[in-house]
Length: 260
Ligand code: ADP
Image 1 (cartoon, protein in one colour):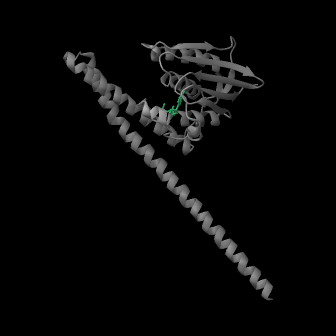
Image 2 (cartoon, protein in one colour; image 1 turned 180 degrees about the horizontal axis):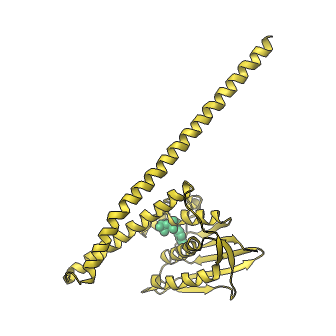
Image 3 (cartoon, rainbow, N blue to C red; image 1 turned 180 degrees about the vertical axis):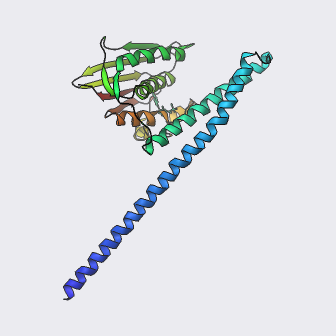
């Protein structure tokens, strides 16, 4: 009789402990949802006024309303540039909170990665103006088809290439290569830039990560880009990996399943 009572008491304790754990998990989930909602609302509310500031600044810049004096132009440029940065930041935060809450709706269409890379190459030209970087592009002459969201996948490629350009000194090399192996599309973006110290690489794909080197050299950024890249790649059933050495360079490799 006593054994049975004892057993029941233990069972009750276990049930109570499990119940407590469950409510703790639920509480954390609720907090996480509230955080997402907060980030999303704030980003949204910030974006509207900033967009209007940038819009009016552009009107002043183009001089049709009032012709700005020469010494005012650099100030207007700075307002517009920083406003744009805020808009990008708001958009990134909105996207991330959408990814977290599962609210981002993905397109699932056949996407030609080789075609996307061509568009990325064209877009990259603007980043290279006034720089003496050696950038090479390599891609198969045939379509490389995966299933997914073209706009998001283009963003992945552009982000990696833009980082390679941004974190490489003028006398450097950036190589972009798309190839196919058994059932996979492989995108390799390598540079001879500042690299990432090995002991910092664990946090690389986390939000707001910025390497000590990037901060020391005052290279601007939010540390959101790569976390978005990693989320998008993951959502497409792919993977991303990095090999990097401090002050020597970095190689990012993205693998995505090919459409059969
Ligand atoms: P951002 O470029 O806005 O800072 P990212 O999320 O794209 O944000 O990158 C996060 C950090 O990872 C960068 O600040 C930098 O420290 C490091 N990083 C990313 N790409 C490279 C690269 N190609 N070479 C060196 N460091 C890089």
